[in-house]
Image (tube, rainbow, N blue to C red; front, side, top):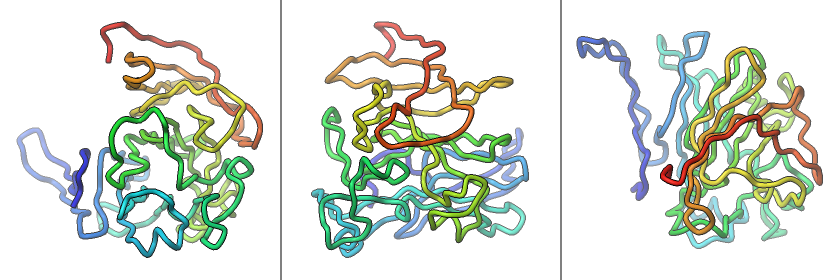
Length: 265
């Protein structure tokens, strides 16, 4: 059961005359497509999906929250002609946690910014996660760099993922153009998500990232958060020339432009 919004499970191409030209379902007891997708230059379709993790998975991973189930985020690329999965990335392969030394991926969170803190909780968030601890909301593909920008709502940051990897490399920490495998090659918006004391948080419940044509900038919409400042903000941020994600360093982006209004929320 999915007790939160954004689920879909079905992708279709529909003509202006309402004819279904292509139809694909990604929905079962464990997996469910949700929120966003993009057609890639090679004709394949890239989409976000949840993968349900069971209580035994959570124990092995060192999860210390109250949720009985966790819904890991993953990216799936399918060939629409064959409906075969040609590339896949799963957040569960790139975790770190500092709660259980006997569980997987135990370590110092701030030392591994390329890893995702399984037990991160935003103290400003209202309400329950219902197991949807990441809540990825949108993606953008960068053809020039062959990377994906994934907007992660409940972490209030954007993850940058190397798309040049093989499926096997995407499960590891090596390979691909950046030789980081499927580990995050960059992230921005909320340094607290990886216990970084450097840099200022600017994103609160962000949504779809959009690359600005003919520039090195990216647009992103941040909902805002009632407990702190109930205003949504549109940001234009300057991406780094190279993705060098370092611990104990300000990895946040320069704000080129922003827009908000007291009535925008």
